[in-house]
Image 1: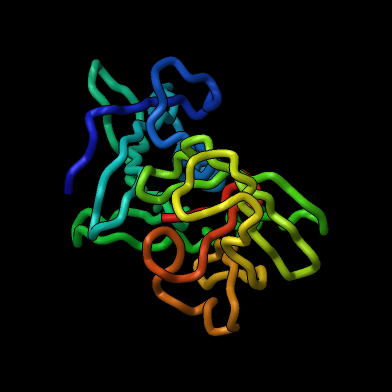
Image 2 (image 1 turned 30 degrees about the horizontal axis):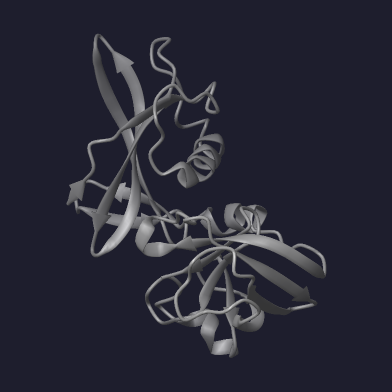
Length: 217
């Protein structure tokens, strides 16, 4: 398992204050939701507040935010819990150290539904999130047209996408909820059960209504 050298530590009681350059900014909202949902279990130890240290890592050819939850004690950091947040699906996993395995957090679906509320019918400007660039937009945007459960993604020529012209419809279909809890642009009901979605998989694209992002390879 490899990881980058950039690390972020935050205190639970003041999670929005950034003191050093961020790693995987997209993960903070999900981490805070996890901490708030487990505050009865993850509590301060001998007056030392719960904090988390975050870094990016790759595991089984997927990118994650790897999060150590714990507290500082006598100039060292004590880890009480590890979680992994999938950079593509935003699934939250609890780490089983004994078996070196990831276990999907059972509360993930309800948290993700809260984050991904579908907006009313209309036109919206979304950033393109490139999966191979850890969700960075590179200045690219699209127009999202929602009509009930139907959706179109139109490129407006904001950036420099190759082989794509202004006004091209780059995706369209039905707004669906995938089995993992994320929103996708599907064409068949069976798309909700596919194992591979979004990014560079060739499966249905992921649409994030909360953060206004359309995911591409």
